[in-house]
Image (tube, rainbow, N blue to C red; front, side, top):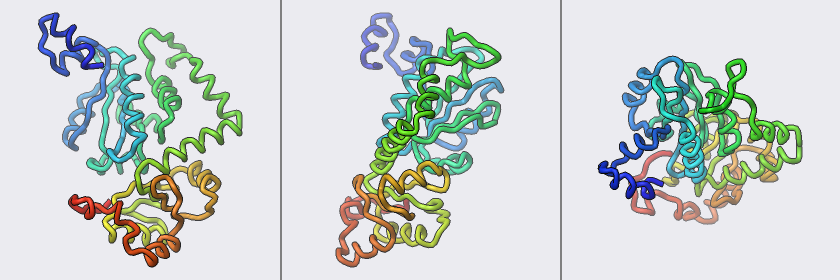
Amino acid sequence: NIAHRQPRLASLGLPVTRSNIYQYNNMSTIREITSLSNWEHHVTSLPPSTLLVVSFHAPWAAPCAQMATVLSTLASEYPVTEPPSTSWVSINAEDLSDISETYNVTAVPFLVLIRNGQVLETVSGSSAVKVRNAIEAHAAKAGAPVLNGAATATDGHDGEVATEEDPEKKKEELFKRLGDLVKAAPVMLFMKGTPSEPKCGFSRQLVAILRENAVKYGFFNILADDEVRQGLKEFADWPTYPQLWVDGELVGGLDIVKEELSNDADFFKAYSIKSNGETAAAS
C-alpha cells in the first residue's frame, strides 16, 4: 500500500517518507515500541481518554504476521484526532519481556486494550473477529453512532454471539485456533507455567532438555487459558502436559521426548540454534 501511494505523493511535491505517507492518509497507524523508555514515554504522553491498543508479537510466530495485517487494517479505520482517541503500538514480547510480564503475556499474538493506565480487555490468539469486536467495544469508530457511551453492535458482534451459542461451531473454531497454535513455531511446548517459572516438575525437565540442546522454541502456558488446556487434550488425543510439538506434529510428553533422544542423540539437531551457526540463547 505504501509503495502504491508513493508516486502520488511525489507528484504533490512531497518527499516520499513514511512520515509523509501517514500524514497524507491522516488515519491511525501502528508504532513499534523498541525500548522500555520508549514505552514509558509513549504511555505517559497519552491523555486519560485515549484508548491504547497494544499488540504483543514474536518474530517466530507465524500468526503474528497475520495479526499485524489485521491490526494495520483496523487502525486505518480510525482517524488521527487531537487529542488522540486511539493509539496503536506493537511490542516484541521477547525483546521487551518486562512489559510482557506486566500484562501476563504467555502466548502471542496477544492484544491488550488500555485506557488511563487500566487494562480494559485482553485477547489471546489470532481471531480477527474477536480482536475487532474488542476494539470496537472500547472505541467509537469514526462515523459510528454511540449509545450510552458504547458503539452500537455490528453484524460482526451478532455473528460472534451466534457462534458462541453453537457448541459445534465453537469447537470448530477452537480446533482451528489450536491448529494454528501448534504450528506457531517449528518447536512448540505446551506447558504449565513459563520457561522462567515452570509450575510442574515435568515442564521444568522438558524446558531443561530443550535448553541443553540449544533448541529455539515457542511456548504456551496452558494454565493461563483453560479453553486451550482442555481443548488441546482432545485435539491431540493426549491427556497430559507438557506436550511437545514439532512442525505441527505431536511428539509427546517428557517420557516420549527422553525416549526419542535416547534412540537418536541428534533428534533436535535440525532445530538447534548452534547447528544453524547462530549464537545460542535460552528461549
